[in-house]
Length: 559
Image (tube, rainbow, N blue to C red; front, side):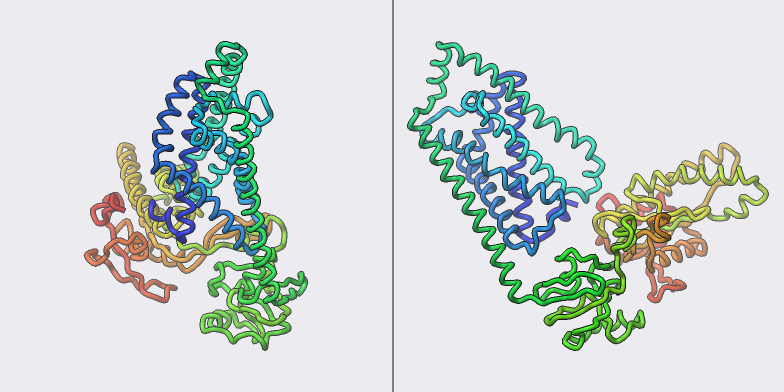
């Protein structure tokens, strides 16, 4: 899990690392301010403790390097963007990030710079009195809120796909609201105390000496440094805008015009695929497989300019042949127009609002579990329908929590069985969740059978097939009545594996695809080969007599 969080380019990893350093600093700084609500001595003591780290040579280099690198990467990322169209959350984070330097520069100059140049004792009390009761106090309070929200959004973007983060969100929201509220309360409490102290002539003189209050000339110098710092920031921002516009102009010079039948005309950069051109210009274009050339949902009929396109690759030709596409049909994810073209999108996803996204489907590599109750028909022959329903509901009440607590969801109930999918952020975690669920289902079944034995009722036996592969998740059905479900060859293979458990007399068959996704060594495992009906390639799977004893064959604790 930890390694998955750090995947990506080196710039992405560096941005995350520097962001974590700055967020950690902000957390303790805001908590420090909040202590003014309780006791100003605690506030000063914590500040002294923090500054032992942050004002050491190593701490200073780490902190300010993180600040400059993080800001530099953000501006570089903006300059290299093809478009400024952003989701609301992303636009909010970028906007807040650009607002931070406008107030942060003044804060740094009046504290660290003043301390180093004029030996100012920049305790919290000094800074609060410096701002109280002027409007700058509210600007700095706004800075605190902007920094905190910016950091929380970044942290959420980074961790939102992890299971523990989703489960912790209700509690983390409370912490996210508490910290700035606590800091504001401490700021106001200490501000009133210090303002009352400065109202006393004798105490004011003592505090001025204690803080080594800067002279008028010193303040003028600090204001000048603040102005220069802001000029540098505006210059960096202007340079970012110039680079962005320059790149846009250069792309325009090397652009190609695309006309969509029943749609707009666009100008896009040469070298992009037609699908990328559509996406960059906000053109709705179906692409179920994400541009891998497999699903053919992005295909277009090229009405003009088709003779100037490069010939189809082997992958594209095979996909088009599979759907008997006419000669002038191409895949938008595979062609890179260099000359003007007129195209017709075969699948247009901009229909009713409730079908604009989910009904297109999404291709994922996930683990799925097929489960079926053995001998259900014979067991329930002669029983009243109410008794049958009662038994099924008791059975599902017992085993379904084992699936959901492992991160799975029941896609559909199939009479006396079910199909579950483990929709996590990657194949490895999905496989891990599926194996955990299979084991817990086995344990839950044992507990249920023990209760049935006390009722003098026959025990229940089950069969499960656990498989991993490419799935399509989407809404299937008429508009307004289309439940979300999964389809694909992987579903058929899992169902066939479950059917083989009856012949082998085992509770579970785990395909090698599941094991390999977790990087489990399969060389020493008693795998069986299966030729499954409707599945072109043979499937190798591990038979498990009792799912509750899965750990005896696979070390799940390491996984």
